[in-house]
Length: 291
Image (cartoon, rainbow, N blue to C red):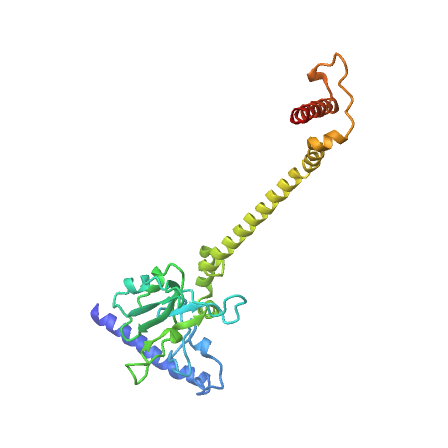
């Protein structure tokens, strides 16, 4: 059995060896020529012969789940309201869950009040230590960290070029939608929109405030309408208020109340006339006493 399996394996190797040259003859020895656009055919399911990729001129497409160095998501630079605004709130969760501890964050402070501001002043990742596990992107509560597809990061300087700062790590949100369109749509559906969670909360808060202001205006309008009819009777009451005694003397005495009329059966004018007469009599008695 072992001998038969060995022979079968060698036959497979021989077949691939022969197909490599047959495939070259079919392309006229121009299989890897830059003038022949057959990269997808050579890397397809029906390809035969050698499966060589002429790197770096040719590169295989990276799957959406491919993980390499993380990057920070910021608003598109042509965003109408907040261009280039960081999605990161410098909460520090990514630095806490990072297994090799290669993330450093410096939180921003308000220069006037000194209070912390929910955005990073500085953000560093040592890509030589980063193990590309993706924990930082997985645990970020604001979708502010994503795993990049750029794996060509080699350089001769290991002390400065391999420590990425915030400027190197920040990339537009449209870049994430370009390298991972399916995942971007899934996250958008889970988040409830393309905007950052803080932007969505601010929009909802602004809508709620606008609704409250509209309700306040409506209540004020109703109160104004309810107070408008009572203004006229109040003015009439002021006009019909009792006049001072000095003015009462100059005026002729009002007609007395009708004989036999009971107090609760008198009209308003009759009651006022009776009050004015009583005031006049009182004033006359006081003047006589003083004289």
